[in-house]
Image (tube, rainbow, N blue to C red; front, side, top):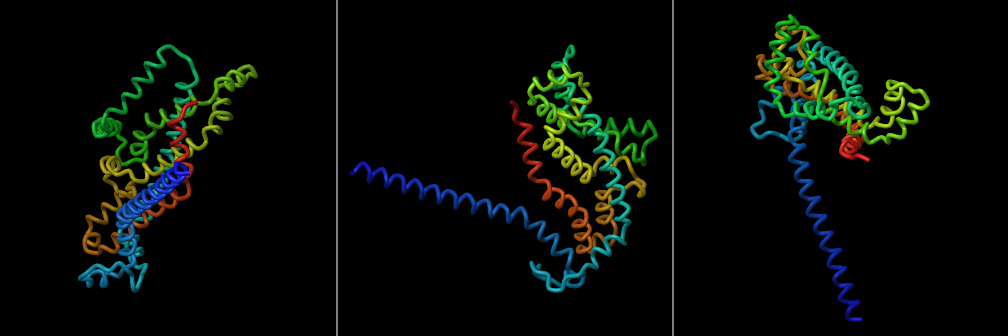
Length: 291
């Protein structure tokens, strides 16, 4: 009986400790979430404040008493932000589509085909990930300039149509598909391209969707390369537009309008992430699992 009582006491203490630990963890996570989300909240409420009310606040207010959308109108009329959105959309769609055309066959070749020097070539390919992006930017700039492709969509797109990391991620997913499926397809006379598009891509759909979403986010947030390769406003992206707003007179003086522009630029990515966050997590987790 005494042993049973002692065991019961230990079990109750263990449950209490687990609950206290859970409360502590969730409390810390909640505090961290507030710290991370506060800048977004501040950006959002500032975008709805009037210019006069913002400048009259001696102590910044966390509540908008008289919200207005005039800041968004100012942001889109102060600079051609609508054109920048269109440029970014074109750049993002074409770059993402071309990248998928490049990386899918590359990942298929490294994961399924057998050719001499495949492992060595893939190792050398992965070593490119160790080269800092800043070193490649200068080479790309010189190449694009020599080709006369500055201030063109071609010059913006070409350096971004491939990615070693995405090839590696997709290759690992393709390699996790049993070889028996491939051999059975070859017995039936299925060509490699048809097997890749009809079998491998549907099986690895979460990873493919994840790669597409991550590439869209990468293109949408692209700043350094568009800033270097374009000095014509006709080819500016939204990131360049935000920089132009900041550098212009109303961007430095009218902070609510500046925040409205940032909200407008950030909103599509936030919606995209919220809609596909489960696919992103599933695709990334599949990328790290083989077998």
